Amino acid sequence: MSHCFVSSPGPAQVSVETKRKLLIVDDDPSVRHSLWITFHDLYDVRLAENGPKALDLFGENPADAVVLDIRMPLMNGIEVLEELKQIDPDVEVLMLTGFESFETARKALRLGACDYLSKPYRVDVLREAISTAMGRREASRKTAGYDHKLAQLQKEMQNQQMREELARTRNEIYGSIIHDLNGPLTVIAGYIDIVQNLIRHAYHLEGDDVASLRHHAASISKQVSNCISVSRRYLSFLEGKAQAKDSASE
Image (cartoon, rainbow, N blue to C red; front, side, top):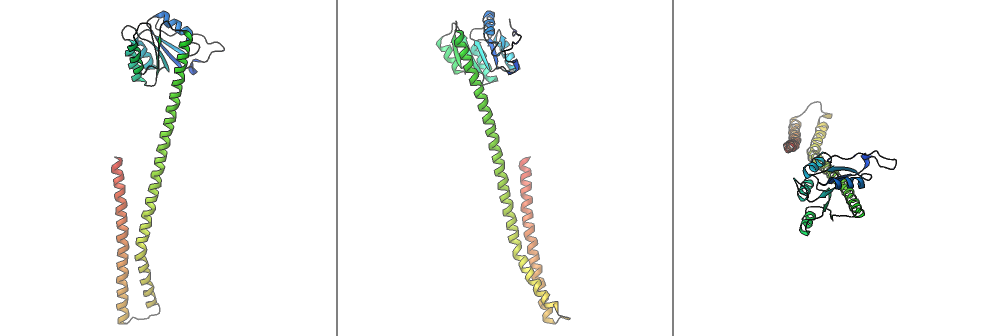
């Protein structure tokens, strides 16, 4: 009996879509059937008669909790437990056995089993153990969700900090450009004012006036060259940053 029983849900039953998933793995068909009878009204129960079948079912649609027998053909419960934990480290696995030693139980718990029950088990004890396992599974999902949200928030904060740092750097560059250009532009404005005063009412220029104009023109040309040099220096700096950014993103 390797298939999962399907029942018609009664009025009080929860739809299969909203039920937590329980995988029962046991080579004894009577045990599988009795466990299905016990839990099918609470969980979406799937049945497997051996380890390979259980791993196939779990790989297709992972369960929230697994009830796993220790002694089975093809693969024992410890081997199946290891494979399940590789697929989903957070799956809750309860081990069932009637023969194994304390060392086997300890190994199962060390590999991540959440509980270990001996056959014959009490139904109320098994119900409680599975309910606890389902609660832990739900808590781990919520914790994972919180961790994901926290990671997103941290990433957003880092992005915001980067944007703020870029804005500060940009403002510092703009401030430096304005400061460095302000000096020569002030000198240029001063010389132009002198030149304008000199020629405003002059109908012809004498030798000294021409020499003075030449001097002022040379000074203006020098300051214009300084402005060009400053602008080229900052443009080169900004282009270098852009190239470095492009190289880093490749």
